[in-house]
Image (cartoon, rainbow, N blue to C red; front, side):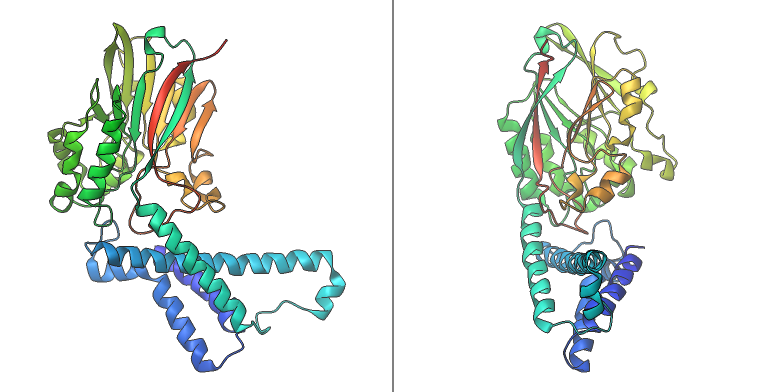
Amino acid sequence: MLHVFSGIILLFLVLRFVVPLKTTFRWKVIVTLLLLIMSQQHLVNRTIFGTLASPEMPAGVLAFQGWMLSSFLLLAVFALLRDISALLLRLSSTTYFRRNPVSASRPVALGLFSAALALSAVLSAVGVWQAIRVPDVRTVEISLRNLPPELHGFRIVQISDLHANRLLPRGWVKAVVEKANALEPDLILLTGDTIDGSTDKRRNDVAPLKDLQARHGIFAVPGNHEYISGYNDWLNAFQALGLRMLQNEHVVIMHYNVPLVVAGTTDRRAVTFGLPGPDIQTALDEAPENAVKILMAHQPGNAREAAAAGIDLQLSGHTHGGQILGLRIISQYANKGFISGLYDVNGMALYVSNGAGLWNGFPVRLGCPPEITEILLRPVKR
């Protein structure tokens, strides 16, 4: 379906930008073909390489594809903003628009189109670089009600949405691991979408995860991409790397003789593959009632349910922070309003990570930088 949406956007661009261009018919055809190539990267990958989830192509090719697709989409945004601005002018100045009607057939200066395309290309290049660089550490202090003094300053490193793939390979994963270990965390939690591709293709890329170190261990939950990539195979592979997968279950960590519950749920995509979907109640079954409870759930949309179940802190990812500031309202709507950062959900703290990596089908970030999240637990100030 992605190539169909791209085709609709292509039609819009041709009508609003290309057809009205002040140039020859031949150049209009050339520009249209260029936009067609830029818009159909997903169709090319699915048709030639047989997959959208993890096309096995060199990193440079994947980055170039992402740059072309992003440039195309940003150009469409600029065209839409141009039309919206014209409409607002029309509403505010009837006289102006009687003299300057907006029409699909009205000539568009070649310079205007070239400037919009150039700006889209530059922003996309910056966005691709932001997407594939090794993420910085983002430190967040989270205050929890009834946090025991022994847990004051407890340090959690959350790594979400690694999406290890040909664009973000072994060397990149190793750099993330080294940054996480340097924080000397009490706990490392991986909140899903760790890989893109089968175990045969990605085993070497995720191998550095075996070097993760934390005082109380490394725990993880699956994201939707684990199921797409063959979850049963990955479950065994993750366990072999020392990642304890929490599938609608919990563990109790003793920190200075104080219990801390760490629970994890499966992803709702699991149901599509005939596997158990997320179940918070099952995950908390027989958990110590008065202990602080942390829930790992890849997608943040269940936060209100988690709050009702007595969770103190939920850690999620999935959204990539929306990837492009200003356009992330679409992702925000799809995730029940939770897109990036810290939220108070009926007294429960929810943190949604921007993620360390992203799917190589759209490797672009603008205003939504990647992150390795360092979380410091604090008591609520009274």
